[in-house]
Image (cartoon, rainbow, N blue to C red; front, side, top):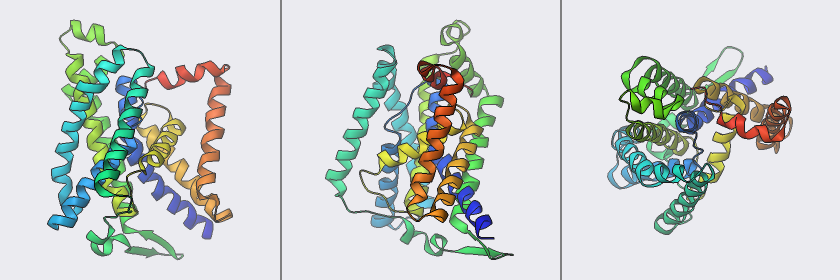
Length: 299
């Protein structure tokens, strides 16, 4: 029964990883951009919620109503000022640009907030530690379950957006062939800006749950990026439901690794990621094909 409990906990943690990776997968699927500042932007959202909770006593869930539009606007500006211009200069430039943005954001947050770790856990009451005990002594935390449910709803919502709305059809058209889409009246530039804004909405939600379930500091963005990147690669770059699968695999691997050895929590996830990455490259038959693997868009 211990192993069943570990697997269940791993699945719930995987929901958080899927939530964290959602925006990264969406941006790559639509524009083929790997946003290195993804984790740092999630931390920005966490700090915005912390300020609202600490200074104005606003519940983090309520604070999201104000933070989400701010992050969406930031995504629109990010695309217009950084991503749009860097994409024209080549595939490597957006990676370098967002890497530089991450450094600026991390150091700016350090300058303003200091190096102390913060958390939104004190502002959500008993939800931080409450749980249900199911038959067989299986313990399910309320916050992890809510996180998993939000990840499924968010991924499902993005899937419905892409498949059943006018904006989604425009996004898919611009993804497949932006030049042809322009000829039939699709403004690819506006579509990409809207897609980046949508991705930033998911980043805001991910940052909120990171801050509620654990602690954060100005330099944790790199670690969050690694988890998100691993979930995306395991599930298949650009695949929304694959991102959920990748997050679950990563979470279960970490949970089982921790059960085997206390130090195996992170190692277990990294080992599974490396095995899957090598397997994908090996199946491709050529190390250089890894670039084509990441360019495959399956949104």
